[in-house]
Image (tube, rainbow, N blue to C red; front, side, top):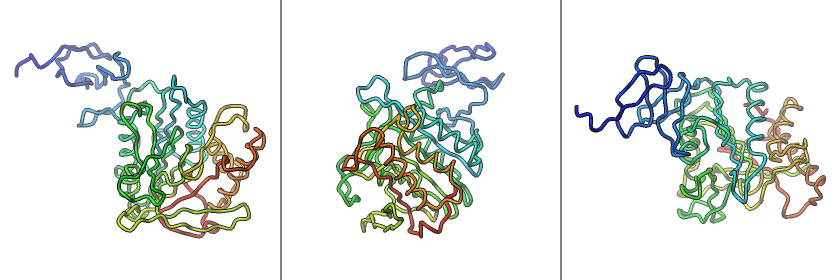
Length: 337
């Protein structure tokens, strides 16, 4: 084989000299098993990964995480340097991680974090990495599995192009590189982690962003008032199937599709998403929760926070939403993850 298509590199861990194809971005050392990332699109520098990082056949590095019955992807984006940067997204991810591990029994090795604070370039919340993490979340899912997708960052509405939205707009997630790589639409999120969900598996999505009422494109949306009266709205469009492959998907969103959500320091003095903080505190402080009680408790906490900062009830206030793949009595089903 001609060597003109190869370059010389050195293993970061043991110093072994290797010939590596020019297009390769990683070395998997045959001597020590260490992984060295040779190039990164983020800043052009060489990055290194610990030995327990695995390389997939597509030359993409993915964390060596346990595929147990419980696993989660937590994504928080602050958009550093942007005029519309956020303050609380990384805090949100950290308190969600603590909730999942300490209270809900998720193995720490099965909780994948994507933030701008991560040193691993494959855990930076770019469009490519977020897509890969969602595929990891659903891969190999089977009956009895409990999955969580959490997102704290910017969301937006864009004109629906395929006629599957009642209000004429798709909701979208904004990766850290959205200005160059584009958004991730709710259609894609649904197709990636909802459609393949098998019978007996459960997916909970907690979405702390603006315009998030139908962020996963689930067919049934629940409205509830403070007295506990609720109703289901059918968001199905005849030609578009937005359900699962038999599994149960539940999305808890910060607000309705036309509303804004907010970071606030009113709860603890530290910037955090109003939905995230109210969700976590409700699970920590109350037992035997139903979905109905969870929604009411979050609405009450957010209303009190709005009053503290002088925001009266108006079209500006955010109202947490619940959407699912199938309707049920939200006052009889216990909240479990």
